[in-house]
Amino acid sequence: MICWALVLSLPVVMPLTAWLAPVSFSRISTSAWLSLAYVSLFSMLIGFVFWYRGLVQGGIAAVGQLQLLQPFFGLALAAALLHEQISLGMFGVTIAVILCVAGARRYGRINPLASR
Image 1 (cartoon, rainbow, N blue to C red):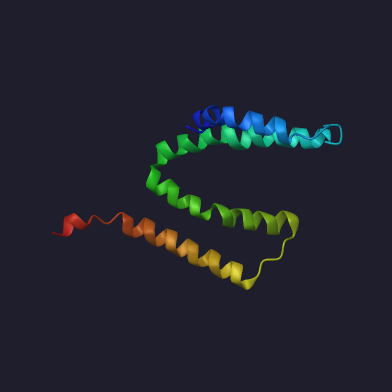
Image 2 (cartoon, helix red, strand yellow):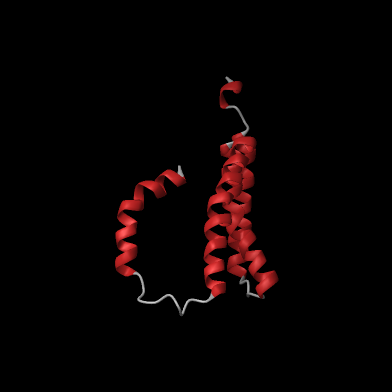
């Protein structure tokens, strides 16, 4: 679906790209081009393939709820690798979201029709 959205948007994006393009690309470093290629190919295109495969295998509802925890893994990595400061508020929100996801997963398994 993502690829089709890109194909359908191409007639609009191409003229805008040509109009807004810089006069010269010489000031853009090789590492910037490689970073763009990496993000475009691996993080976006190939990442979607594995993500949707995981959704199929684990179930959309279960895996979709786990995706709510993804920003907090990023927060933990930023703290560990980049030495970002984590405030008490950030930690509190993280715990609250984890509890909400755990509760939704637990109570989502209960069949309300079975008790009738």
